[in-house]
Length: 135
Image (cartoon, rainbow, N blue to C red; front, side, top):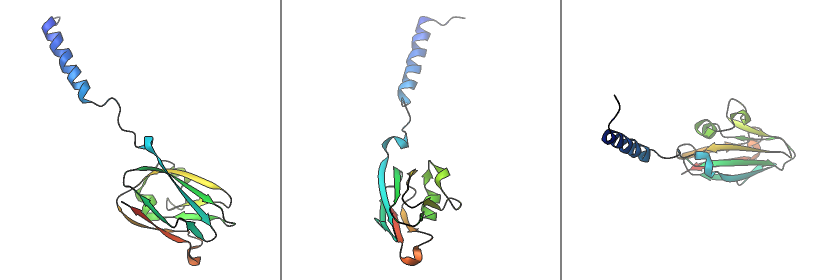
């Protein structure tokens, strides 16, 4: 049985109201990525303290200007963060290896608020340590 013109208008109005209530596109967390650069030098991070905002997307740029291979070892931070490029993680997802003279870029969304340890797994004994704060 065909719908009456009044019923059609009511149906269209209802559907239009539903469509207005649904956002035209879901917020993409990767659309506003903030860059953070860390330079690795024998045997320190520059800077050695990083600050992130919970839920914010970042492109973490790790540049190794040293003569040795270095690691960005932050197990709790990397395991808790949402990592877009998981294939760049090493040691079961606990660190990022950067060869001498190379750089690595990894996209991530900062995890829950807190303080996280940062070390170079191969050079922490020589003072290559730092910290991460998520506000």
